[in-house]
Image (tube, rainbow, N blue to C red; front, side, top):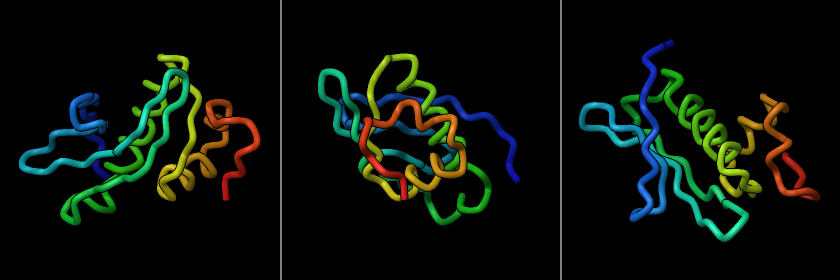
Length: 100
């Protein structure tokens, strides 16, 4: 397990959160309205899979969403699976949304 702590970048122009790891760009794409954020797609380069990069990315994005006081709509299956494994983050999810 890679334990490197990567700084989270909110690339507002590209509408994505990202890590810069060498030549790689793990990212979570989003759509943001006034009070809601929809996480639509997570992408981790194959070379970084299985190293905990995706989970760290989701955790840091959720921390940022909480800090901003936004309501989360997790459209991305990877994000939904993370929340299912870490139910303490359900508090951010829009009421009525079932995490499968």
